[in-house]
Image (cartoon, rainbow, N blue to C red; front, side, top):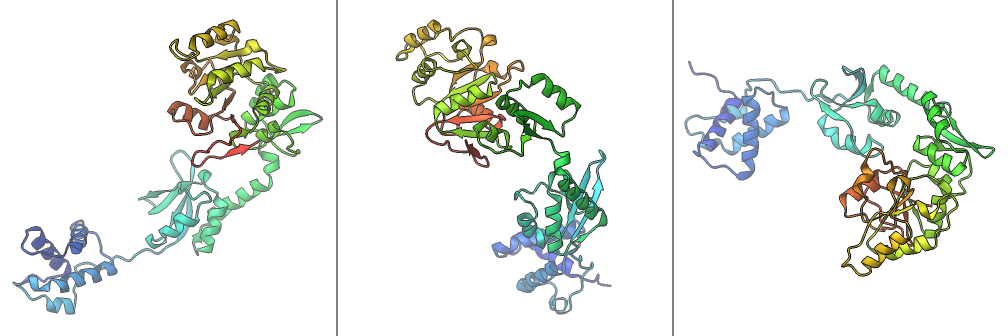
Length: 395
């Protein structure tokens, strides 16, 4: 008795003929043949659309089957397995991982993937990952704007579990109570106060504040308490009221005034190669007129070589003005192009970082420090170029 033939058997025979170089097929058909062979060999079910493609290939190359007639099977196809039904479910549901973190599962058909990637996240970055267990995209709800995502899901006809809607209601309640929950700072009667702090924040605040509005607002921002509820009429208030970390001051004298007003240290100034750093240092020292700092607080952290133009004279000038004293007693540190290695020691914490560079640094260490530091100020007549995905606030 002859073993019955199925369409899957025929496509496997056709693939074997190609592999064994018995026949030649068009180049664009090699990929699909290989893909169908792999799926059948792995016992994966085919979709109806894939089945129609297979029939087209068999009709195209039916003349290569010289030992049997496959025409009847092409007229009345017989399949070994049923077709796989594509799941078109669009569903949102929650679950927890082993650490107790709540995850949102976003289930949708493959045909929806482009819409999902484009519309479901406010910053256009998809933090979700495919989970083979739930057969859905999965993401911690703490990493997304849940309210926005659910709104998009509703717009596209997703089925949404009650637990998800309960979570949305909870988030919206937190938003309405933001004033009572999130930390921020205010100015009352000339004094900076923290709102919605905790015992640890309050202890740090009480041991480091000085009763100076500019200094204390800067400290509050470093602690995550942004300024609210006041007119932003000074540069230090502008810094204290935004989560941005990079700022630009056009006039150098305004930069000096801000540094003096903030009264925090160590201050590290990284000079660009142009204009001439030695001239900048001389001008800075000669015109130094700070209230909260003295010339004795300045440390010049770079030295030109003796073969460099004006090198020996500049080095002698540094000694004459006492700009080479021990690091421990310094407050303002001036570097050229890059910070000193010892500035990355855990005992040395840069409170304020500044530079006169107008272009992103080509030194990897300097570039990383400038983009990661919580308080980076650029000062120059020309506003510096911001790196990709960063913003520089004009003061």
